[in-house]
Amino acid sequence: MIPSVNDDLSADIEIKKQPSLTYEIKIDKNKMGTYVEGIEAIKQSIYHIINTERYQHLIYSWNYGIELSDLFGKPITYCYPEIKRRITEALLQDDRIESLDSFEFDYSKGDVLVKFRAITTEGEIEIEKVVKIG
Image (tube, rainbow, N blue to C red; front, side, top):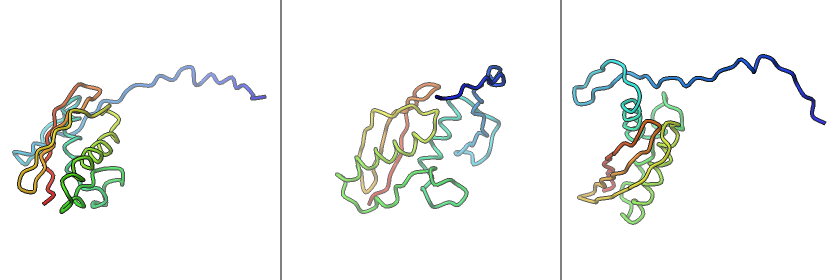
């Protein structure tokens, strides 16, 4: 028999979603801006995750970033599904990103251009990433 607990404290707890405020990074101007939130904060998070090589920076958790450097020199038939898997694995660590779809690949001179769509809690985002494999 499982004992029942009469706990009055849990009845008054209200869970609120915290805003995803973060400093805006203006990459093209090489400076920081004001705060951004919502879909702009998620876009910035996606940019940082897919441009940070996993296990290379001590300040980040081992769950943060993506592993792409070991794809250099591998056959294109191996790289396409592996890039898709690794991008999906890296981005789904963020609980604001619900799913990824519409992956498209284009190979040119040792670079793979990947285009895909992220479905987030705030809406859909179209993303492009260039992966060097040759």
